[in-house]
Length: 268
Image 1 (tube, rainbow, N blue to C red):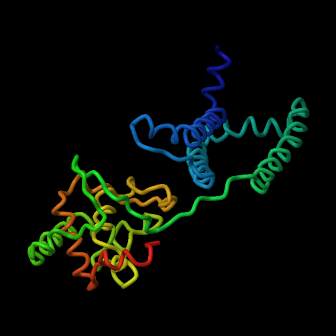
Image 2: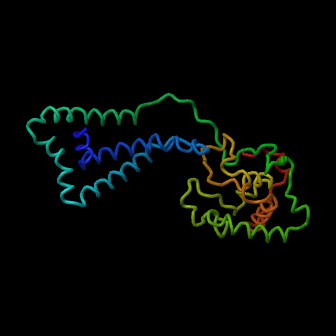
Image 3: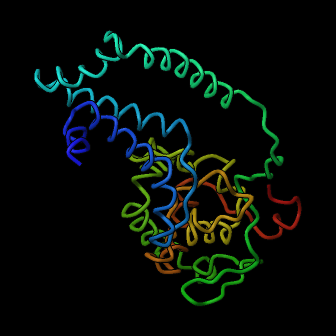
């Protein structure tokens, strides 16, 4: 017990312990934490693991070197392993183990693996025929914007403008070009609404579905785009979503795709 405490109070072994705990947390802890709070998770990419471990290592080196006494104690085991006569077997073992470890890691990185072909993906996946919005079923097929049918475009535009600038601006930008303040933090970046190749190719019911359900509502063929769009049905009413859709089309200067057009060539 005394020997264990002595090791735990030594800066070198404290650094090793922190590295091991950090690796276990990043590699195994993070992927299993989201399900405990009811959200989905995915494996942490090895590039991210490496980035975090390098950050932890840099922090450890700063900590052990900011004090002369601690730095001297930290170097003692390393110096002893390299110089002491009674550590010859340890040196030989390290000279064999380190190249073998490097070779094994390299082999794992470059070896060919057998895997199923990736599933087809689509930036604009086909919407479901109907969705549930706050407990009510909405049929999307053939659905137009009810605010356009009520001839309340001016009022809807004003409401949509308020909704957009209160909620959508940080990601999609002031000019609807997908360059908001937070846009650089997402991959892929938020959608730009300007130009004829974006929302002009979509029906308004499609846009309603994407806003209401967000990234969590994407079907399987929509991955791995990993949209960061939240599910706005938890925040906005149906009329507010239809209003912001009016604002998007009017502000972008394009017309929504009609169902007559959508029944022609299939959406991709």
